[in-house]
Amino acid sequence: MTTFLVTLLLVVVTAVILRWRRPAWYWLAFGVTFAALRVAIRYTSVMDACGLTVPPSRWRLSLARLAHRPVPEFRAPLILRLRPTRTGLVIRLKLRPGQDAFDVSAATDRLRHSFGMYGVTSREVRSGVVELRMTGYDVLKRVQMPAKTDQAPMRIPVALCEDGAVHYRDYRAVPHGLTLGATESGKSVYQRNLVAGLAAHDVALVGIDCKQGVELFPLARRFSALADNPDTALALLDALVGHMEDVYQLIRTAQRITVDLPDAEIAADIWDLPEDMRPTPVVVLVDEVAELALYATKDQEKRRDRIITDLVRLAQLGRAAGIYLEICGQRFGSELGKGITMLRAQLTGRTAHRVNDESSANMAFGDIAPDAVIAAIQIPTDVPGIAVSGDSTGGWTRIRAPHTSLRQAVNICNRHADRTPALPALAAFRPDVAPLAPASVSLSKAATATA
Image (tube, rainbow, N blue to C red; front, side):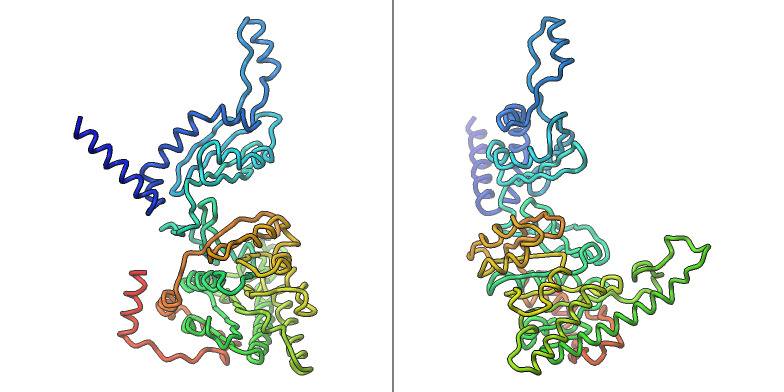
């Protein structure tokens, strides 16, 4: 008996310590079992209390009357599947006739309280089937990306969603994006994660960093072109527009449209071309877009208009040529001048960290997801890295990127420096960096392995 009590005490103390210091370990060791039992035991009563049940059908009532049996109880949605994950539970429900996915979505906060979970979100999988994603702890407090993520070209895991899912930056699905964030909001860390993720892919990175290059130039070994002032940025953007036109000429040459050519083989963008003919895709990262739009003299105004015109052209026409824009800034508003709202309309992916004013949040989400505006301006100052991500579908979610230091990002870029393509059109803007010494390479790999 004494041994049993000692063992029980050790288990309880271990559970308390894990829940305090390592919530992910606690969840996998204890929490997932307790949560599954709570759902199984409370399911019917919780669904009834949340108004997610329907009365029995007429034929069941008639059958009960004929058989002189009690009136059948109200029916809750049928559980198709209950799957534990590393952060919570995923429950797939089959709705009863007369129920709607919006009913489940409106009751998520009550379900969270009733089942004792940290958070509950819902999404409609298909007609009549809803998926509930429940998180057992605050996954955004200490972000830990899963060891394995989905691997696909131009699809980069950059952050973790509040429901425990991985947030991907998929350039083929969402070609251009806008990232906003005030000073110390975590925007730079998000950008580092993006560059570090892209470094291992066959892609050309082009950077425009008008803060004299302090953010992007440390990563220069993985960049095919860099600009650190508005004058160089204009020349670089002009060269990118010329490169885009050359790629379109290549696509037209490769189309070879004839009567007997199958529809699937007609090329309309670089991804339809044979792999040996496909140009290298290009991701353009603009670190502070406001610096490109501000001017003080007439000459600077002309330069500004040409820069914004080039960005708009790349946003409108660049996708098929494999050119993708990632626009970042502390402030993005119509007061930056003509062409800014036209540029914003082409930036489908929107991510907003903590912002200093509501108008910046409105510029990010006002035209696609008004509810996300409120969520963006409510991000606390003491939790850097928290962001709201949305797209043109109207959906949005809270995300947080794992902390990546500048040293870690530099090590990753140096490790993949051999993947940096040399684009002839951008050769004049290739950063001049000294070759890595053997000792530096060894140190870089060791630092990356322990990161």
